Amino acid sequence: MSEPLTCDVVVVGAGMTGAACALYAARAGLDVTVVDRGPVAGGTTGAGEGNLLVSDKEPGPELDLALLSLRLWRQLAGELGDLVEYEAKGGVVVAPTPDGLTALERFAAGQRAAGVDAVSVPADRLPDLEPHLAPGLAGAVHYPQDAQVMPALAAAHLLRASAARLLTGTTVTGVLRGPDGAVRGVRTDRGDLHAPAVVNAAGTWGGDLAARAGVHLPVLPRRGFVLVTEPLPPRIRHKVYAADYVADVASDSAALQTSPVVEGTAAGPVLIGASRERVGFDRSLSLPVVRALAAGATRLFPFLTHVRALRTYAGFRPYLPDHLPAIGADPRLPGLLHACGHEGAGIGLSTGTGHLIAQVLSGKEPGLDLTPFRPDRFPPRVETAPAPPEAR
Ligand SMILES: Cc1cc2nc3c(=O)[nH]c(=O)nc-3n(C[C@H](O)[C@H](O)[C@H](O)COP(=O)(O)OP(=O)(O)OC[C@H]3O[C@@H](n4cnc5c(N)ncnc54)[C@H](O)[C@@H]3O)c2cc1C
Image (cartoon, rainbow, N blue to C red; front, side, top):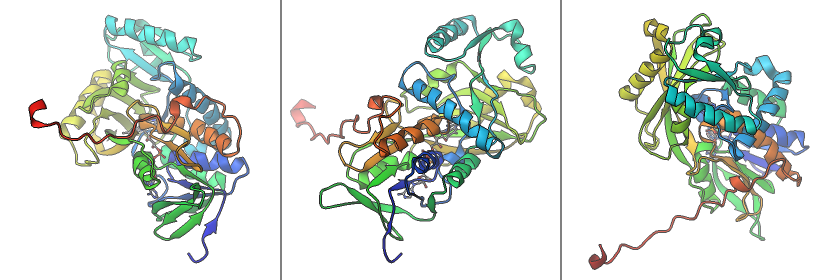
C-alpha cells in the first residue's frame, strides 16, 4: 500500500463479531474496512457451533443481549435465512433426576420473568418433542426461541451484505495514535490504515490487540471440542442438552468440564459437545475429552451408540473472567472500541453486539446499558514483588 487507506472505522477481525459490527456500522452510513490476518471465519467462528441461545443464560446483562440479538437474527433471517442456514429449531434442556428438574424449573422461572419463553415438559411428553431421547429422564424445559445458524456462512454473508472493504491475510501489528493521543488507525504488515475509530473484534486474541493499543483486557482461551458424526437422516429435532451444562458454562474453573450437548444439522451430521477447559492454545487431540463427549451423548440419545463419529475439532472460546464480553468504547483510549470476549456465545450475541457498536460509533444512545460490558472493568495485572524470606 502506498497512500494509507482512509475510512470511518477499521474493524479488526473477520469472525462473526467483526462481520456483525461491519454490517450494522455500514447500515449506519459509515465507511468500514474489515481486516483479518487469516480468512473470513478462520478464528473461533470457524471452529464452533452456531446455536443462538437464550436457554443457557440467567437473567442479567448477557440474557438481555441475547434477547436483543435473537430479535436481530430473526430480522436477518428474513433477508439471508437460507444462505446462513438459519433454523428456529428451539432448545430442550433435560434433567436426568428429580433434584435436577427442581433446579432447572427454578432457573426457568427466573428466565420467564426476564422475557424468555420456557415451557415445562413432563417426562411423559418428552417423546413428543424428541422421540429418540433415552427413557427415564425426570423432565425438561423447552425453549422455543433458541435457534441455529451455520457460523462460517453467517460471517461471510453478513460481510457481503455490509459491502465493507475486506482485507484478509493482513495482520494488525499496532494501533496508531494522533498528536492528541486518540486513535488514528492501525498499522498492518501491509501498510497503515487511517480511521478515527478502531473496533477490536479479534475474539480470543482481543487481549493481544488491546495490549498493542496499550490497554489491558484479559481475554483467555477456553478450549472446546466438537465431535461430528456421519450424516444421518433427521432424528434430533432441537438443540438438546443436559441441565448441568448451564453450571459448566458459568464455572470459573480452569479444569475440564463436560456435559452432553447434542444437535442435528441441516447437512445431516450430528454435532456433539460440550467440553470446556483452560489449557492455553493447545490444539492436540484429547481422547479422554472426546470419549466423555461420546459417552454423554449416548446417555441422552442411545441410538448414537451405533453411529460413527467422523471427526473431531477444537476451538478456543474467548473467555473473560466474569463471563461477559467487552462491548463499547474504551475510556482509556479515545477512538478504540471493543467487541470481543463472548466466550461460548459469540455467534448468538454477535448481532446485538454489532448493533450496539454501530450505535456507539454513530454517537447514539446504545439500546442496552453497556456498563456491565465496560472494557476497563478488569483491574490491571499488578506485578507483586516477592515477599521477604521471613514473611513466606
Ligand atoms: C467448540 C465451540 C463451540 C461453540 N459453540 C457456540 C454456539 O453454539 N453458539 C455460539 O454463539 N457460540 C459458540 N461458540 C463460541 C463462538 O464460536 C465464539 O464466541 C465466536 O466465534 C467468537 O467470534 P469472534 O468473531 O469474536 O472471534 P473469531 O471468530 O475468533 O474472530 C477473530 C478474528 O480476529 C482475527 N485477528 C486476531 N488478531 C488479529 C490481528 N492482530 N490482525 C488481524 N486479525 C486478527 C483472527 O484471525 C480471527 O479471524 C463455540 C465455540 C467453540 C470453541
